[in-house]
Length: 244
Image 1 (cartoon, rainbow, N blue to C red):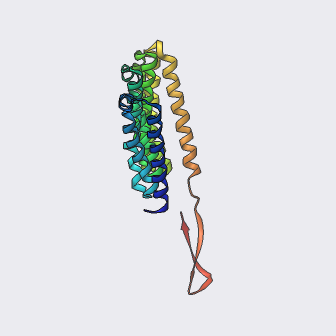
Image 2 (image 1 turned 120 degrees about the vertical axis):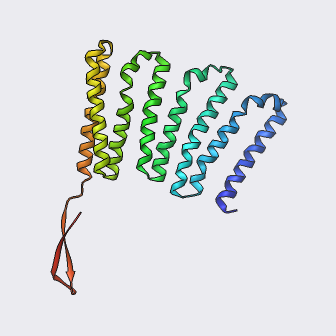
Protein backbone atom coordinates (compact mmCIF):
# COMPACT_ATOMS: atom_id res chain seq x y z
CA UNK A 1 0.00 0.00 0.00
CA UNK A 2 1.52 3.29 -1.07
CA UNK A 3 1.51 6.43 1.02
CA UNK A 4 -1.52 8.13 -0.55
CA UNK A 5 -3.73 5.03 -0.27
CA UNK A 6 -2.75 4.43 3.35
CA UNK A 7 -3.51 8.08 4.14
CA UNK A 8 -7.01 7.83 2.65
CA UNK A 9 -7.65 4.51 4.39
CA UNK A 10 -6.57 6.00 7.72
CA UNK A 11 -8.88 9.00 7.33
CA UNK A 12 -11.83 6.74 6.45
CA UNK A 13 -11.21 4.46 9.44
CA UNK A 14 -10.94 7.43 11.83
CA UNK A 15 -14.20 8.87 10.48
CA UNK A 16 -16.01 5.53 10.84
CA UNK A 17 -14.65 5.06 14.36
CA UNK A 18 -15.69 8.57 15.42
CA UNK A 19 -19.19 8.00 13.98
CA UNK A 20 -19.54 4.67 15.80
CA UNK A 21 -18.35 6.27 19.06
CA UNK A 22 -20.92 9.05 18.70
CA UNK A 23 -23.80 6.59 18.31
CA UNK A 24 -22.53 4.48 21.21
CA UNK A 25 -22.32 7.40 23.65
CA UNK A 26 -25.54 9.12 22.54
CA UNK A 27 -27.67 6.04 23.15
CA UNK A 28 -29.31 6.29 19.75
CA UNK A 29 -30.66 3.05 18.32
CA UNK A 30 -28.28 2.78 15.40
CA UNK A 31 -30.29 0.25 13.41
CA UNK A 32 -33.55 2.16 13.78
CA UNK A 33 -31.98 5.51 12.94
CA UNK A 34 -29.82 4.33 10.05
CA UNK A 35 -32.27 2.39 7.91
CA UNK A 36 -33.49 5.61 6.32
CA UNK A 37 -29.95 6.46 5.31
CA UNK A 38 -29.24 3.35 3.24
CA UNK A 39 -29.08 5.45 0.00
CA UNK A 40 -25.75 6.78 1.29
CA UNK A 41 -24.37 3.39 0.21
CA UNK A 42 -25.45 4.18 -3.35
CA UNK A 43 -23.92 7.66 -3.10
CA UNK A 44 -20.70 6.22 -1.67
CA UNK A 45 -20.48 3.64 -4.46
CA UNK A 46 -20.91 6.35 -7.08
CA UNK A 47 -18.31 8.53 -5.35
CA UNK A 48 -15.90 5.59 -5.27
CA UNK A 49 -16.33 5.12 -9.01
CA UNK A 50 -15.77 8.84 -9.54
CA UNK A 51 -12.50 8.67 -7.59
CA UNK A 52 -11.05 5.80 -9.62
CA UNK A 53 -9.78 8.05 -12.47
CA UNK A 54 -7.94 10.12 -9.84
CA UNK A 55 -5.79 7.12 -8.85
CA UNK A 56 -5.75 5.30 -12.20
CA UNK A 57 -4.54 8.04 -14.50
CA UNK A 58 -5.68 6.65 -17.82
CA UNK A 59 -7.66 8.63 -20.36
CA UNK A 60 -10.20 5.85 -20.89
CA UNK A 61 -10.98 5.87 -17.17
CA UNK A 62 -12.87 9.11 -17.76
CA UNK A 63 -15.69 6.98 -19.22
CA UNK A 64 -16.49 5.86 -15.67
CA UNK A 65 -18.04 9.27 -15.01
CA UNK A 66 -20.84 8.37 -17.44
CA UNK A 67 -21.89 5.72 -14.91
CA UNK A 68 -20.83 7.45 -11.70
CA UNK A 69 -22.77 10.70 -12.19
CA UNK A 70 -26.23 9.08 -12.58
CA UNK A 71 -25.54 6.73 -9.67
CA UNK A 72 -24.71 9.66 -7.36
CA UNK A 73 -27.78 11.59 -8.55
CA UNK A 74 -29.99 8.54 -7.97
CA UNK A 75 -28.55 8.06 -4.48
CA UNK A 76 -29.16 11.71 -3.56
CA UNK A 77 -32.78 11.57 -4.76
CA UNK A 78 -33.34 8.29 -2.90
CA UNK A 79 -31.84 9.80 0.26
CA UNK A 80 -34.11 12.85 0.07
CA UNK A 81 -37.14 10.62 -0.52
CA UNK A 82 -36.26 8.31 2.37
CA UNK A 83 -35.59 11.05 4.91
CA UNK A 84 -38.56 13.23 3.91
CA UNK A 85 -41.01 10.48 3.04
CA UNK A 86 -41.93 12.35 -0.13
CA UNK A 87 -41.72 9.75 -2.89
CA UNK A 88 -43.65 12.04 -5.23
CA UNK A 89 -40.29 13.74 -5.68
CA UNK A 90 -39.51 11.31 -8.48
CA UNK A 91 -42.59 12.32 -10.44
CA UNK A 92 -41.36 15.92 -10.57
CA UNK A 93 -37.57 15.72 -10.58
CA UNK A 94 -36.88 12.66 -12.77
CA UNK A 95 -35.21 14.85 -15.48
CA UNK A 96 -32.30 15.20 -13.05
CA UNK A 97 -31.34 11.66 -14.09
CA UNK A 98 -31.05 12.83 -17.70
CA UNK A 99 -29.07 15.90 -16.67
CA UNK A 100 -26.72 13.83 -14.49
CA UNK A 101 -26.03 11.52 -17.44
CA UNK A 102 -25.24 14.57 -19.56
CA UNK A 103 -22.89 15.79 -16.83
CA UNK A 104 -21.18 12.40 -16.80
CA UNK A 105 -20.58 12.59 -20.55
CA UNK A 106 -19.26 16.15 -20.23
CA UNK A 107 -16.77 15.20 -17.49
CA UNK A 108 -15.77 12.10 -19.46
CA UNK A 109 -15.11 14.27 -22.52
CA UNK A 110 -12.77 16.48 -20.48
CA UNK A 111 -10.93 13.65 -18.72
CA UNK A 112 -10.67 11.37 -21.76
CA UNK A 113 -9.99 14.39 -24.01
CA UNK A 114 -12.45 13.09 -26.58
CA UNK A 115 -14.58 15.77 -28.23
CA UNK A 116 -17.12 13.29 -29.61
CA UNK A 117 -18.36 12.61 -26.08
CA UNK A 118 -19.64 16.19 -26.08
CA UNK A 119 -22.35 15.18 -28.59
CA UNK A 120 -24.41 13.07 -26.12
CA UNK A 121 -23.51 15.55 -23.35
CA UNK A 122 -25.04 18.48 -25.23
CA UNK A 123 -27.99 16.49 -26.59
CA UNK A 124 -28.92 14.98 -23.21
CA UNK A 125 -28.24 18.27 -21.41
CA UNK A 126 -30.62 20.22 -23.65
CA UNK A 127 -33.33 17.57 -23.44
CA UNK A 128 -32.95 17.15 -19.69
CA UNK A 129 -33.18 20.91 -19.21
CA UNK A 130 -36.31 21.11 -21.35
CA UNK A 131 -37.94 18.22 -19.50
CA UNK A 132 -37.12 19.79 -16.13
CA UNK A 133 -38.45 23.16 -17.27
CA UNK A 134 -41.76 21.63 -18.32
CA UNK A 135 -42.03 19.57 -15.14
CA UNK A 136 -41.57 22.69 -13.01
CA UNK A 137 -43.79 25.14 -14.91
CA UNK A 138 -46.21 22.66 -16.48
CA UNK A 139 -46.16 24.37 -19.89
CA UNK A 140 -46.24 21.16 -21.92
CA UNK A 141 -47.99 22.90 -24.81
CA UNK A 142 -44.60 24.46 -25.65
CA UNK A 143 -43.48 21.10 -27.04
CA UNK A 144 -45.11 22.01 -30.33
CA UNK A 145 -42.10 24.36 -30.68
CA UNK A 146 -39.59 22.82 -28.26
CA UNK A 147 -39.16 19.73 -30.45
CA UNK A 148 -36.97 21.94 -32.64
CA UNK A 149 -34.37 21.73 -29.88
CA UNK A 150 -33.85 18.04 -30.74
CA UNK A 151 -32.15 18.57 -34.13
CA UNK A 152 -30.77 21.94 -32.99
CA UNK A 153 -28.88 20.48 -30.03
CA UNK A 154 -27.44 17.77 -32.25
CA UNK A 155 -26.40 20.34 -34.85
CA UNK A 156 -24.72 22.55 -32.25
CA UNK A 157 -22.92 19.52 -30.81
CA UNK A 158 -21.56 18.63 -34.26
CA UNK A 159 -20.49 22.25 -34.72
CA UNK A 160 -18.56 22.05 -31.46
CA UNK A 161 -16.85 18.79 -32.43
CA UNK A 162 -16.05 20.18 -35.87
CA UNK A 163 -14.37 23.25 -34.37
CA UNK A 164 -12.41 21.25 -31.78
CA UNK A 165 -11.23 18.59 -34.22
CA UNK A 166 -11.09 21.05 -37.11
CA UNK A 167 -13.08 18.66 -39.28
CA UNK A 168 -14.74 20.38 -42.21
CA UNK A 169 -17.13 17.44 -42.78
CA UNK A 170 -18.37 17.41 -39.17
CA UNK A 171 -18.57 21.19 -39.12
CA UNK A 172 -20.58 21.17 -42.37
CA UNK A 173 -23.07 18.61 -41.07
CA UNK A 174 -23.50 20.60 -37.87
CA UNK A 175 -23.96 23.85 -39.75
CA UNK A 176 -26.52 22.29 -42.10
CA UNK A 177 -28.51 20.78 -39.24
CA UNK A 178 -28.43 24.06 -37.33
CA UNK A 179 -29.63 26.02 -40.37
CA UNK A 180 -32.47 23.55 -40.94
CA UNK A 181 -33.47 23.94 -37.29
CA UNK A 182 -33.44 27.73 -37.62
CA UNK A 183 -35.66 27.51 -40.72
CA UNK A 184 -38.09 25.22 -38.90
CA UNK A 185 -38.22 27.67 -36.00
CA UNK A 186 -38.99 30.47 -38.50
CA UNK A 187 -41.81 28.40 -40.01
CA UNK A 188 -43.30 27.80 -36.57
CA UNK A 189 -43.59 31.56 -35.94
CA UNK A 190 -46.62 32.27 -38.18
CA UNK A 191 -48.22 28.86 -37.51
CA UNK A 192 -48.35 29.06 -33.72
CA UNK A 193 -49.10 32.61 -32.67
CA UNK A 194 -48.98 31.85 -28.94
CA UNK A 195 -45.37 30.68 -29.18
CA UNK A 196 -44.22 32.98 -31.97
CA UNK A 197 -41.83 34.95 -29.76
CA UNK A 198 -40.33 31.77 -28.34
CA UNK A 199 -39.86 30.19 -31.78
CA UNK A 200 -38.31 33.37 -33.12
CA UNK A 201 -35.88 33.43 -30.20
CA UNK A 202 -34.78 29.87 -31.00
CA UNK A 203 -34.05 30.86 -34.58
CA UNK A 204 -32.13 33.96 -33.52
CA UNK A 205 -30.04 32.03 -30.99
CA UNK A 206 -29.27 29.46 -33.67
CA UNK A 207 -27.90 32.15 -35.96
CA UNK A 208 -25.79 33.57 -33.10
CA UNK A 209 -24.39 30.10 -32.31
CA UNK A 210 -23.65 29.43 -35.98
CA UNK A 211 -21.86 32.78 -36.33
CA UNK A 212 -19.80 32.11 -33.21
CA UNK A 213 -18.84 28.68 -34.53
CA UNK A 214 -17.69 30.20 -37.82
CA UNK A 215 -15.53 32.72 -35.94
CA UNK A 216 -13.94 29.96 -33.87
CA UNK A 217 -13.40 27.89 -37.01
CA UNK A 218 -11.45 30.72 -38.62
CA UNK A 219 -9.48 31.43 -35.43
CA UNK A 220 -8.35 27.80 -35.25
CA UNK A 221 -7.19 27.78 -38.85
CA UNK A 222 -3.43 27.43 -39.11
CA UNK A 223 -1.93 29.80 -41.68
CA UNK A 224 0.33 28.41 -44.35
CA UNK A 225 4.01 29.10 -43.84
CA UNK A 226 6.98 28.48 -46.01
CA UNK A 227 9.67 26.33 -44.47
CA UNK A 228 13.18 25.80 -45.84
CA UNK A 229 14.38 22.22 -45.84
CA UNK A 230 18.19 22.16 -46.03
CA UNK A 231 19.84 19.77 -48.46
CA UNK A 232 23.39 18.43 -48.32
CA UNK A 233 24.03 20.30 -45.09
CA UNK A 234 23.70 23.68 -46.84
CA UNK A 235 20.82 25.76 -45.45
CA UNK A 236 21.17 28.34 -48.23
CA UNK A 237 20.34 25.84 -50.97
CA UNK A 238 17.13 24.40 -49.67
CA UNK A 239 13.76 23.47 -51.01
CA UNK A 240 10.75 25.52 -49.94
CA UNK A 241 7.72 23.47 -48.96
CA UNK A 242 4.30 24.53 -47.73
CA UNK A 243 3.44 23.45 -44.20
CA UNK A 244 -0.02 23.43 -42.82
